[in-house]
Length: 228
Ligand SMILES: C[S@@+](CC[C@H](N)C(=O)[O-])C[C@H]1O[C@@H](n2cnc3c(N)ncnc32)[C@H](O)[C@@H]1O
Image 1 (cartoon, rainbow, N blue to C red):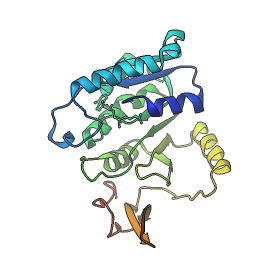
Image 2 (tube, protein in one colour):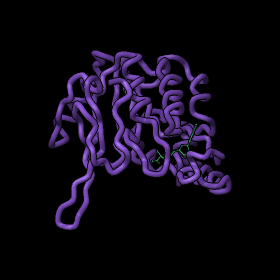
Image 3 (cartoon, rainbow, N blue to C red):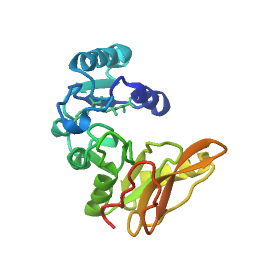
């Protein structure tokens, strides 16, 4: 959630009947988070929380939005099984953090639901384990990796159970609204994902790379997928 910027985008684009927003807004004393701009001092975290309550005051009053100040994996138990149409994970980016959130919310999603999250990538300063955690989660539950957005240094991912009709609908909408769609069948089996860069005319640009080996010139340490 942080300041609620992406939550506001979700609200305006998806117009959900109900949206649960979860953030602990606690400063965590962890060596791997010292350079994480989303782990600011506690006073800033308190201000971010207050800011979100103000930003969504009307929606909170109407019952459309509920804000939960909690560690995300612990909050999962308070929701019934098969409750959510979709979830979007963007909290603790360590391997254990992402795995904990995905496993805690998996039973809480409708069988046809979607599992989305941010930062399918690595970070130069913060220890991200998102790629490895998501790939292992897919293998454990035999999920489909439906999509990744390529225009972002920190891409979002979309997963669904095999044969999900909501997943099929999502892919249909994406294919008709996005100019270039490429299918990587059975990803991540046999693939190594890397983030690579290209320079031309004094400009530098990142792009996503998929192949049998990891790309050599990733701008953050390229790593292979944990499941291949
Ligand atoms: C990258 S930010 C989220 C940004 C948000 N999606 C946006 O774009 O507006 C990550 C947030 O997760 C929160 N966070 C980190 N670990 C958490 C955990 N275990 N449980 C709940 N929130 C956590 C942090 O307080 C931070 O606000």
